[in-house]
Image (cartoon, rainbow, N blue to C red; front, side):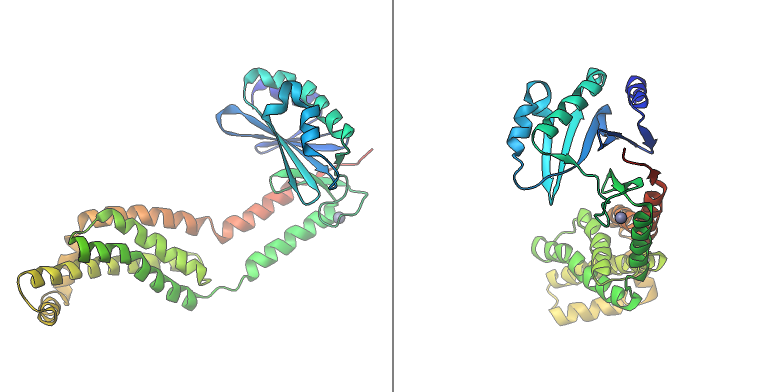
Amino acid sequence: MNKKFFEILQDKSFMFFGSYATGVIDNYVITITHTQYSNYSVLFSTEINDSVDLKKVKSDFKQQYGKKLELTKANNQLGASYVFSKRNDTEHFSEFVNEIISAFKNNDVRPSTNCFVCNQSSIDSLCIDNDRFKFVHEVCAKQQITDNIDVISSRKTSYLLGTVGAFLGMIIGILPSVLTILLAETIYSVLFMIIPVSIIYFYKIFKGKLGLYSLIVTIIMSLVSVVFMQYLVIVLVFMEMGTSISDSFALCNMLYMNLEGIIEIITSSGSEYTFLVIGLFFTWQTISASHKGEVNNQKNISKSIISWKIN
Ligand SMILES: [Zn+2]
C-alpha cells in the first residue's frame, strides 16, 4: 500500500489485515483491497430495498467519480466498488468517501448493520465474508467457520469412484490425439497436455479424494495414454504397409506388448512427455489447492474477526 494512502487510512482508524484494509464511517463498513497495477478497490457494505434507484445514486455522485463507480445489487445488498486508478486519487479518499456516503443517504441506501450470518442486530465484530468486511456476532462468525470446516471435511470422497472417473477422463483426454492420429495420421504432442488435466477433472467430478493418490493415478494413466498412442501409431504404420487390421494388431502385440517393447515406446516419446509434464503441472496445482487450502481459508477468516461496537 502506498505510504501516503496508508497514512490517510490510519488517520481514519482503518485496520489492516493481510491485503485488506477496513474501517467504518457512519456505520458503513468499507473494505479496501489492493488490485493489480497499484490500484485500490473500495467496497461498501450496504443494505437496500427494491425502491432504491441505482441510476439516481450514480447520478448524485456523478460529477467527479461517477464513471469509475460500479454499483452491483445482490439480494438486499448493494456493492459499491470504486477503483483508484491514479496515485493522486488516493489523496482525495476522504472527499470521495464523504461524497458517496451522502449519495447513499440521499437515496435510502442504508449501512448494513445486522449480523451477516443471523441477520440480527447488536453486532460485536467485523469479519471477512466474500472478500469484504461485514458486521457480525463473533459467535455467529465462529460457528459459521466451524460449520464450513465440517462440511469440507465430511465431503464424501472415494478413491474407487475417483479412479473410475479418472479412467473416463483418460479416454476423453486421449480422444483428440486418437482422432488426429487416425484422421491426420500424425501425433500432435501439444494435445498430450489435455490428458492429465482431463483425468483429474473427471477424478474430481466423480468425487475422488484429492491428494498423493490422485497424483499417482494421474501420472500412471498419463503414461498408459502415451504408450497406447504410440502403439496405435505403430499399428497404422503396419496397415500402411499393406498389412490387414487384425494382422497389424497381432504384429504390434507380438513386437511391443512385452517389457522391452514398452520401454522402447516410452523412451521414444520425448516431446509427448514435455506436454504431459506441462499438463501435470496444472493438475498438481488443482490437487494442492484442494482440501487443505479450503480449510486454511476458513482458518484465515477466523483470524479476520475484529471486535467492533456500533455507536
Ligand atoms: Zn449473528
